[in-house]
Length: 354
Image 1 (cartoon, rainbow, N blue to C red):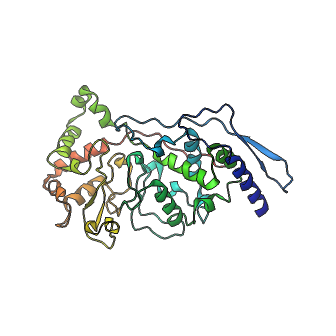
Image 2 (image 1 turned 135 degrees about the vertical axis):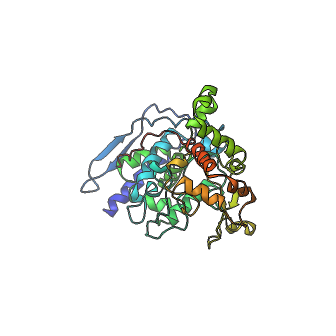
Image 3 (image 1 turned 180 degrees about the vertical axis):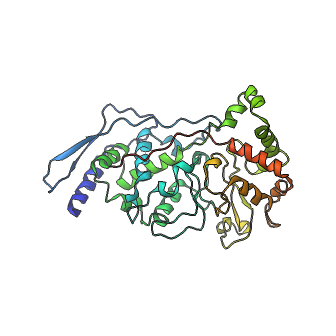
């Protein structure tokens, strides 16, 4: 079996050498095939797999700013996203063979989670961040210590999946006919193809097209939407001061703030000692789907999260003083507005894995 796996990998590498694509808008005159030897022996007849054309890259929804210009975004292709969609759900990438990216970044929860466990069964210190609108991020992780998505992904492969690298993680499955064809179509070594595919998939998990986005573009809808959302918007951008940190239209400023209470988690202090205990402002887009809130998941409802901000201690960011002065009804209105920042989603079904 080992000899067969190595054969599959070798063929995948050979095909990958002639299949590297860089342009975002790619047209395939003929879908690549991947003849891979399978069966009881090395001389078994190869099985040629022809992949269907990849679906288009997801469109940017209403409400989000223009995409920034970057080589990373320009490199996204339908082929990479399609391959990434499979790998995101494949638990065989983990050292235990059973933990996938989707195990923690649950699509039904806005690609977020709680205090999830690593593949080795160790609980994480922080809750699983949402993979929403990463296309606009410049730093990654609750403490922002990763300045590239490549580094962020590699750290997750090692810390969460228990593998030294994606090259190691994908080796046992790279020879599967369907995966070999995807690797050939994306290009590069199996590890490179997997990294680029997972990045492309993560970068196209957009969160927009929410009720508030439609209301902003429709004066009639604003007038008929009912008072809680409109009152919440006025408070969010005014008296409560929420928009100071949760800045529209992404509803995050991408900066680091203390909310408290102090814990053993240094947060941004790992990068800047002056910001010990501070964590990045999470976007509120898609928040209604999340099962928990705050970096440590201590709030399990939006109401609890708002109350936690209002009860922040003296060491907290000064911007939180305003929200602490809201009445219970005003907090309910802010919550109604935040709920209106989550769009309607069709369930993301687990794909059929090869």
